[in-house]
Image 1 (tube, rainbow, N blue to C red):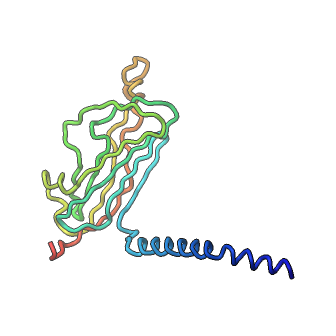
Image 2: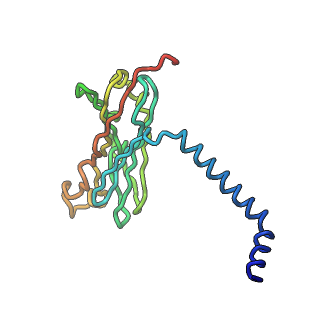
Image 3: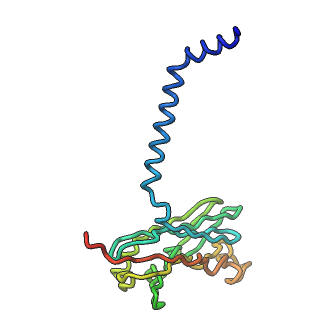
Length: 195
């Protein structure tokens, strides 16, 4: 009986702190719920492919309005074990957009200049491109509503140490001709009347 009375006294003593703690937890849970309710979790896509030394990924929106600016992000991560002198085209990651009639557009501008990047294991190179600006300057492939396929690919990746060594042939210096992600479908919708 005495133990039960002691427990009641402890609860009464800490009761205000317990109530404040519950109010704080409840507030955070409401805040978290309100953020998640407004967020469209299916608004973006992400696709990744891995080789023995690299992981290439592409991210972007699943749906955009015709004429709306949108960005694609490509990331190449070096997952090898030793530092690497990597030779590659100036824009190491390119995006290809294909419309419903199999017309396509690549996001690089010739001439391709060779660049060297020293990579340590785990390092990344990110390329972010505003696709609508690029397309407006060249072909107008993305102005029409419809389904499009988009994928990322790298330029040829060459081991710089082997390229400038007499011990290796040109073919042996090539790490990978190119890495290509799976294509992802995006939808270009009619421009809304609000614009």
